[in-house]
Length: 286
Ligand code: GLN
View 1 (cartoon, rainbow, N blue to C red):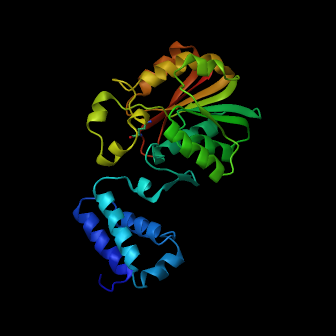
View 2 (view 1 turned 45 degrees about the vertical axis):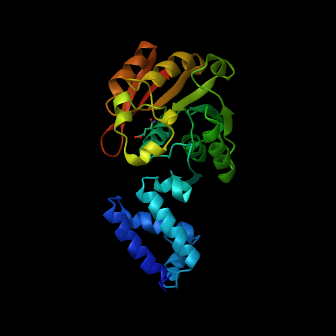
View 3 (view 1 turned 90 degrees about the horizontal axis):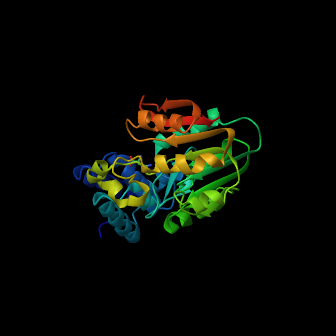
């Protein structure tokens, strides 16, 4: 191997990633090098390390990570953690990566949740636990359950609860199973970012998304299966005046709002994200 500095490794990696068509090549390369150097790429320390000679092991490990990134593996899986709503969460193969879009759902719940403390809430299809953990940091809850059916995702959820010194209660269960619902106490808030991609969406996934668990993405042929089932099964678990809040896929607001109205919810609304796209639907139990 040649004598090169970490800065030169970084520069070569940016070129290789750009050439391969990876978006945000600079950010990707810096994050991956930070991972290999065990320091945050935004830190002063990282800047100092850039001027040092690259160790052979750093060079080979960094090149290997860049190759995996070029082959489509999501950056978040390669670095093993991601930030959501100011929290650091462990992510990796087997769990959906928290999306920035989902911060809209957290904001909406924080704004609309009933004000009587202490609230009892459930995050259905919780994945990494990002929603439950973010809510817990900003509202006073008596209890928040995070319900997830995949054992692989559950291991991340449990890890993230510990990592954030959280009191969120993980529940390994299928939210579409009536038995699960019957085991729950009455709730003030139900929040869910269920799988909502349609059959057509699943056929044109971005390469990175194909690495994520299909079960966390696919919401049945029309993408709406989880909304139908969750509303039907869980409405009996909501207290009077309780809030239900969903993240939705593109252009699903009318259908999901109609479902809530048909099931007797009131003040049914859709909320937009920062880009002006409808991202969540909320309603209150009469
Ligand atoms: N927002 C995710 C995506 O675009 C889908 C997540 C979900 O189905 N809840 O891939």
